[in-house]
Image (cartoon, rainbow over all chains, first blue to last red; front, side, top):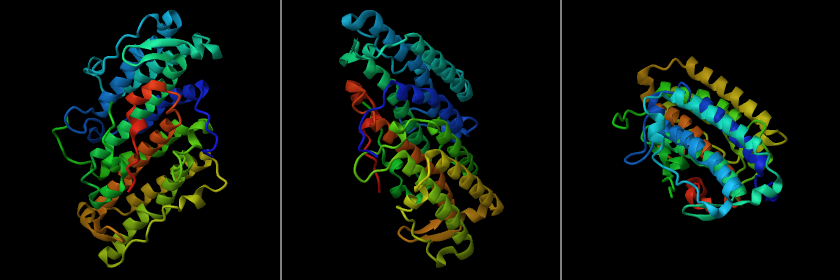
Length: 184
Length: 184
C-alpha cells in the first residue's frame, strides 16, 4: 500500500485536525494523575502542559499565521511562537477544562479555515517564518496537523515513561521507552 | 508534580487499557487511507497492521499469559508471541472492522482480568518469559498498558511520516519526524 506516495492533502489534514480533540478526550478524560500530571524529568512537560501548548497554538499560531499569509504574504514575518505560552493557558485549570478549551478553540479555527474559502492556488501563497524563512500556506496547514501528531507521540511517551520501572525486563521490548523526544 | 514517583498501579493500568480502543476509534474512524494504509518504508507497518497486532496481543498475549502465571507459575514458559500473527488477523478486514474487534477483545479481556479477583499479593506471582526469564504478574499487567502506549506512539509516527515532505522546513521542528522507532 505504501507504493502510492501522494502526501495527505488539505482535506486529509482537516480530517485529522477535526479528530484530535476527541482522541485526546477518549484517552485522557478521567485518567489518574499518575498518567497526566507527571513529566519526563527536568525541563519536560506533563500531559496537562502539552494540552495547554496545543491550546496556545490554536490561539496564536496556525490560523493567525494563515491569515498573515493571506493578508501580507512574505512582506511581514509571523509573530514568534512563545514555547512557554502554555504556562498562562493552564494556570488554575484542570485537565478536563483544558481538553474542553482545546476542542472549542480547534472547532472555531476549523470554522475560520472554512471561511477563508481557499482555492487550490491559494495553497501556494507564501509567508515568512521568523526563523525558517519563506514557507507556503500548504506547508503551514500540513504542519498544523503534523503538530497534533508530534504531541500525540509525546503524550504516549510521557505516559509510558511513568511505567518504565513497573514493566520490569519488558522495558527492552517497548520502543516508546527508548524514545528521547527528538526536540528541536 | 513529578516529585511523587509512585508508578501507575493496577487500577491506573486498567483505566488506560479501558480507554485505548476509544482513543484509536476517535483518532482513526473514517480517516483517509492516506493516513491509515501507508507505512514508513520497507519492513514497517501501516496503522491497520498495528491495530491487527493489538488484536493479536489480546488473543494470545496478555490475559493468556496472566492465566499461565496463575496456573503454572515459573514451571512453564509462556508461548512465544508471534510478531507476524497480525497478518492473519487483518486479512480481508477494514480498519473499522479491526477497531471494533480490538474494542470487543479488550473488553472481554478486562472482564477476564476482573474475574481473576486478584489480591494484592497475587501481583508478585512469577511466571517465565521464553526470552526474558522470570517476570511478575505485576510487570505483565503494567506492560499490557505500556504496550498500548508504544503503539499509540508508533501510530502517531506512522501518520506523521506521511507528511514529512508536505510540512516543508517545519520538518526540523517536529520531533515525531525524527523518531526512528526504537524497535527491539
